[in-house]
Figure 1 (cartoon, rainbow, N blue to C red):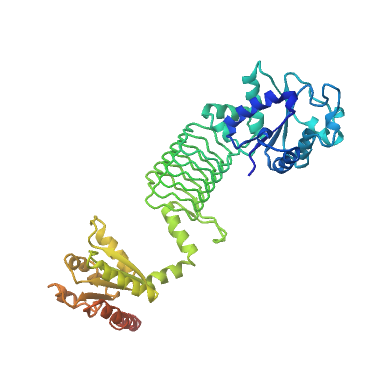
Figure 2 (figure 1 turned 180 degrees about the horizontal axis):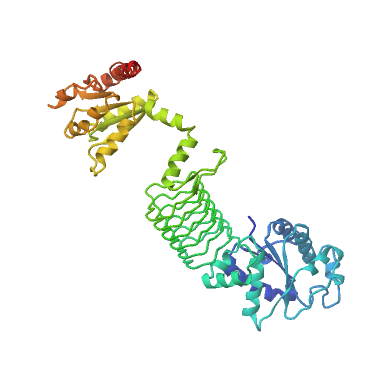
Length: 482
C-alpha cells in the first residue's frame, strides 16, 4: 500500500528547503517513506519516467512554492511549458487524485486559480501551509499534522509517544486513525486513545496497552500475543481472528466486542466484562476466566441461521463444535461409533507397541485416544477416565506391564457393562493376579496375546475388532428384549 510522500519543488527556487524537509520527514516516516528526486541519477528522460511511475502510487504530494515557482527571474512562465517537470508532477497528482499539500516557502504568496494553467487550477482548492527557517519547529509541526491526516498511515504520530498522539486525537476528533498493518510490537501505549482506529493486521506483540481506549477499534487479525491490556476499554471492538495468546486482559471491558474466531489461548480474562460479545469460533484453551462477566454471549453465524446466547464462553465453544461439525447427532455418533480409549503405561518399551495399535485403529476409521497412567494423578482422575470410557465404542487395556492398571480398571469395568474391553498382553508377560476377577464381567473380552509386532497387527481384525462388534450386537439385542 502507498505510504510515500513525494516532494515536488524547483531546485533553484527552494532546493535548500526541500533538502531540509526531506531530512526531517525521513526521521518521521523512515528512509523509504519519502520520495526525493535527488536520489534519481541520470538524464531528464530517466527522471520523467521515474516521476510517472511513482507519483500515482504516492500517498501525498508536497508542492513547495517559492517566489519563482510560477515565473523565473526573467518572468518566463515555466508552468506553461509542456516539458516543465513541476507541472508534470502536479498534473499527475491531480489526475490520479493524490492529495496535494501546497507548502509556501519564506512568505511566498499562494497562487490563485487565474495564475495557473487550466489543468492545474484545482491546486488552488488545497489548503496551503507556511514554512520558514525562523519558526521551523512550530511550522514543521503543523505541516506534519497535515501530512499524517491524509497519508495512508498515522504510524509516525504514534511513534512519537502517547502524549503527542492523544493531543493529536484531541485536535482531530473527526479523523479515524489509519494504523493497518502497523508494527508497534513492544511499545508502551498505556492510556492511549485508539478509539475507532483501524489496526487490522497490526503487530502489537508484547505491547503495553494498559487502560487504553480501544472502543470500536478494528483489531481483526492483529497480533496481540503477550500484550498487556489490563483495564483496557475495548467496548464494541472488532477482534475477528485476532491472536490474543497469553494476553493480559484482566479487568478489560469487552462489552459487545466481536471475538469471532479469536485465539484466547492462555489469556487472562480475570474479572473482564464480556457481556454481549460475539464468540463464535473462539479458542479458549487454558484461559483464565475467574469472576469474568460472561452473560449473554452471542453465537451469531451464517451457519446457525439464528441468534444463540449463552452465559459461559466454554459452553459457547462446545456449542460451536457441535454446530460446525454437522450437528449434535453427528458429534454423538462420532464418539459412540468411532472412539477407542487406549489405556496403558507409556514407557519406552510399551509406547511403540501402543502406537502401532493406535495407527492400525486409525487405518480402520476409528478415533483412538491415549490415556497414560504414568502422568500425575489429580483428584478428578477417576472422573476423567470414566468420562472418556463412557464416550468410547470400546477400550483397549495394555496389561503387559500392569503395575497401576488394575485399580484403574476397577473404576471402569464394574460401572460400564455396555462398553467392551480388550486386554492386550505380550506372551512373555504373566497376567496380574487380580485379572481373574475382571473375567467375571461380560464386557471384558478374551485377551489379545501376541509374541511379536507382526502377529499383533495380523490379529487386530480377528481377535480385537470382531469380538468387539459381536459383543456390541449382543448387548444391543439384549436391550431390545428388555
